Every structure is written in C-alpha cells, then in structure tokens.
Image (cartoon, rainbow, N blue to C red; front, side):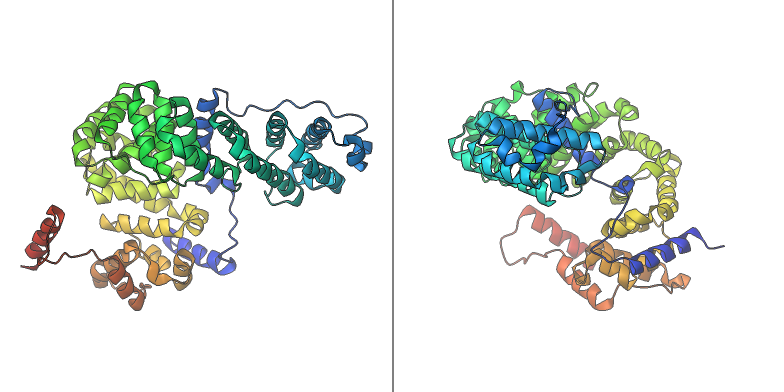
Length: 506
C-alpha cells in the first residue's frame, strides 16, 4: 500500500499534467474568498442598518408579458416608468422559471434590453436608483459579461458616471450603496469616480459620510492620494464611532495596504477594542486585528500585550479565522503571547480538517517564526496533524501552490517534513504552476526549503527533486538583505545589522 505522502505526490503530479494552468476549476468548498464577501456584507449591513440578504419585493408577472416582450419599444414608448415596470416583471419571471442567471440571455429579452439602453439617459435620479435596485434582485449570474446583462449594467454605470459632476456627497454615496449589491464596484467606473470626487474633502466629512467613503475605498482596494486626511478625521471624530464603525475604517486602511501612523489613534483603537471584547463580533474583531498587526510597532507593545491578555477568556467563542488573527497579532514585531497561543493551538488541533490551507500555513508561520514551545509539545502535535492532513487538500494545493510551498518551509523549520512532499514541490511542472515560467521569481520559502533538504536530508540519502541551481542563485541574489556600507551615515538598524554580521563572521 502506498504511503499517504506518495499518494499526494502522484495525485498532484497527475492533476497538474492533466490541467491547463490557466483553466483550473475547483468546487466552492475550497474557496478562500468566502470570508472576504461576508466581511464586506457585514460592513454594508452596519452602514445601511439592514439585515443581510434582504431581498427586493417584485410585483407579480402580468399575464400578457409574452406579447409585451415581442414589441417592448411600442409598449414602453418613451416612458421610463414603463421600462422600469417591465424590468421588474422580467426579473420576477427569471426568478420563477428556475432557469437561474442564464435566463436573462433568452432571445425574448433582446428587444427589451435595446429599449432599456435607449431610455436610461431619460431616467430621473430616483428612477436610476430604482433600476439599480431592481437589477440587484437578479439571482447570481454565471458571468457579468453575458451580453444582455453586460448591456444593462454598463449602461447604468455610464449614466451614473455622467451625473457624478452634478451630485453632492450624499447622492454619490447613495448610488454607491445601490451598486454594492451588484458586486460590480471594482468592474464599473462609477464607484471609483465617486470616491475620487469625495476625496478632495475627506478631512471635513462628517463621521457617517467618512465611514461610507472608506467602505467603498475598501471595496476598490485603491488608496486615495490623501489617505492621511482619513486618519486625521478618524482621530478627530473617534468618539463618534462604534466598535463596528472602527472595524469598517480599519478595513479601508488594511485593504489598501495603508498603515495607521498616528500613535495616539492606534492607542485609542487598542483601548476601545479591549473594552468591547466581550461583545464585538468575530468579523469586526478580525478586521481590527488585521490593521493593528499591520500598523503596530514597538511603542504599541504594552497595549498589544494588554489586549492579548484580555483575549484569553474570549478565545473559546471565537471562530477559527478570528483565532488565527489573534495568533498573528504580534508576529510582525516578534511578540509571542503564550496564553492565547496555547488555547488557539488546542482549538486548531480539534479542527484541523476545517482549516483552510492558508490558515494552516499562517499558524505554522507563527509557531516556526517565534520558535514557540508549548507545554507537552502541543505545537508539534498540531504541525504533525497539519502535515498528515495534506493528502486531503489536493484541490487547494493546486489552486494555491505558493501557499503550499510556504507551509512546507515553515513546517521544516520545526523539523517536520515528508521527503515526498518536498520532492513534489520541486517537480518542474509544480514550480511552473506556482511561479509560471519565472521560477527565478520564487521567494525565500523555496530556496529555504531547498537548503533544508540539502543540509538536513543529505545524510538520510534524500534523492528527490531539488530547486533548480541557476534559479536558486538568482532568488538568493534578489532576496538577500541589504548590507549597509559603514563608510556612510548609518541608522540604528544599520548599526545593529552590522554588529550581527560581525558577530557571525568573527
């Protein structure tokens, strides 16, 4: 009987051989984007003060709809209200046929789409808003580029874009709210243009408008030029924001890769989160923890320790993802909090199969990066369980090969490995899957894993694949740390690095 490790090696190799790299189709149960959608939905529900998944009520389908669809231009004339009424009827019809998203592509609707496109410029602002709300009631579609659907949403997007210059901030944000349920904020041009117009007055926005603006900045993931104005406004009106509001603002900074530089603001966030730990929702907690990790430096260590101490009794109720970000909180500045880690490791041990591949890679990073040693070596038990579960994760490995390489690297730092797994990632086809044809563009994790095999497995007669030698030299050259020249003015970090270098070369 083949070992699990050998099975994984063969399955991964065969799967890669049979699959075009650009056309990998996986089932929904291995997706990693689910939480991001729920995070944005949660934030949107806070802003709108509505329940999630609220549906638009559409009228009943008229008996003579088939006749109307044959000549929609004649029936609608130049009346926008009739076009909107017919759009509602069509959406209702699609919902009752059970044909799903593709029903909109029925040839019966082609004439209506043409009529709709013709009349959209005549819509009032209210009618334009109603059209977006009606279109959002359509069930999930196969592609936003289906011809009929594409014509509908791009026409509405263009019309909103035309009216940006005449709308005030409230109107701009209202229409951004109408676009959100369509999941087209990034593909369309309106939301970006609206944010661009609002960005000129970020410092002066009242709290409710600032909150919505930052939410849509988070959706587009494109920072505005004056993100510092958001930080200033955030600090000035801090007391006006609830813990959920703070989470939304944190999402905006984190998703645009913008750290908060104001130390006083960071301390306020730490204090408020610590105060509300018993009631804060998992999604809000996770959003805040992400930004705190990204922004915190040595001056925030005391507040971080205090927060982690307060989190200890909360760990049992938290989700796996929230627990992961609790564990990651101090990793950037090498703060290791054993009390929370012990509870999180135990929780992960009982839910290994429920972890995403990325979750497994991140917790392995925390343990290896901090060289964590818990009582009874429980961290080693978790890492071995993660390694043993890898044969069940072939779809995830194929979809996220870089994450898999990083996971094996972090496991190897704790001397936990399987030679077949290591050989598998250095298979030429797997390297191409992970790094395309630019294998020299691999990160430190690849060369570090190869170095582990060369140093630690050579005596065991390791005969598996190795990272290509030429690519190894290139990656090492590209990723090596800068060594400062002592002839020039040095910072404290430069002097520390030179001291370490001198110690190891003595």
